[in-house]
Amino acid sequence: MIKRQINPEVENALRNNIPVVALESTIITHGMPYPENLNMVNDVEKIIRANNAVPATIAILNGVIKIGLTKNEVKSLSETKDVLKISRSDLAAALTCGKTGATTVSATMILAANANLKVFATGGVGGVHLDAEKTFDISADLQELAQTPVTVISAGPKAILDLSKTLEVLETLGVPVITYDQDELPAVWSRSSGLKSPIRMNSAQEIARSHLIREALEIPGGQLVANPIPRNAEISFQEILPIIKKANLEAKKEMVSDKNLTPFLLDKIYNLTKGESLKANIELVKNNADLACKIASCLVSSENYKGWLDKKYIFDCIFVIIICYVLNF
Image (cartoon, rainbow, N blue to C red):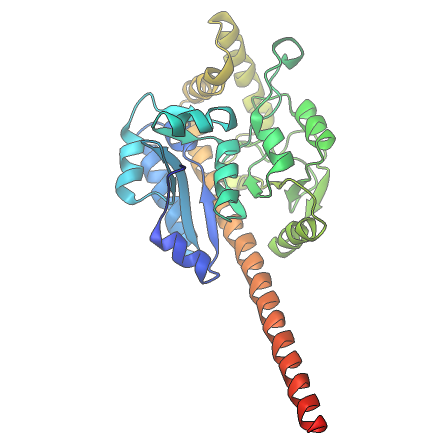
């Protein structure tokens, strides 16, 4: 009933315990213009392969779930305009109607978990929008993080959001927000946001161990890792804040809302920063992919060790049985 195609390279990696990093496709279709979007995906996939891992870009093509797009499929998607933006609520309908669409963070998490992928690299995650107390505009990403067991590596919640309310909702939903190697929560384009991070971890090993402990305790949901943008690529929070406010005012004036709001704001910010926000976006995605590879490698190492222990236990049991048999004989 559900049509799904897993790229042979991804399938081979899963079978042989090679690290795999999931990637979303909305960042290609709604986050960046062509050809920057295509160049970004190609660069990110190169970084993942350089880390001895396998990239798995996820999308829906003609009603088929694709886990690991081919180069031609990525190119086609990057050039196509008016592609559907598929979230949790649209997923079943898109598959039923044979649609083509790019997956958001929430839909990518669902499909990644369904394919047994545990690590997913993206840019920024959605959250509670400004004036949400009036509009109730809260991203499905937050609920997904609370129920789908994937560790998501981002550069933090998007700076266009109400960051303090986003943190509050994540805490209520029981989602661990882990900032990598600093005490302050980053806000995508900026290393600082003025908010203290709930959790700090300083290594990929710690983040992987936390993922495994949550699995062992059967705690539902995933982890949100906030990985600060590299210093040489950031736009300071003080610089970006008035630009975000101006973009939000224009969105209100033009009555933009729902799924159209984030792409509208990102486009306005791109123009107001004269392209600097796009350059920052590209660098932070690369940075997140690099950390995601390290976390995925730690998880695979743990699985390999667990597999070795299981085999050793079986061999030990067989050895004991043989000894008992010989002694009784």
